[in-house]
View 1 (cartoon, rainbow, N blue to C red):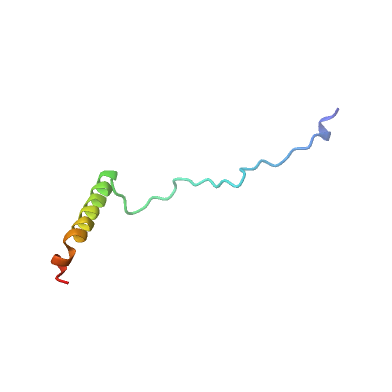
View 2: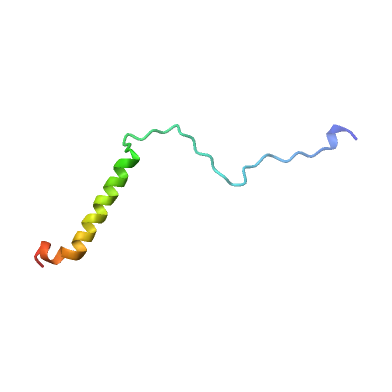
Length: 58
């Protein structure tokens, strides 16, 4: 058999998209800062659920 009879299929990534780290955001936060911010938001929400009517005067 000769090499000319072989059929080669084009390589495919099966629809997967690759993203590269070329883009750097101007805003960057440490993970600890994000966790503390989320905890503060949760505490504020719990405070408003329990004492919201008294605090807001409604």
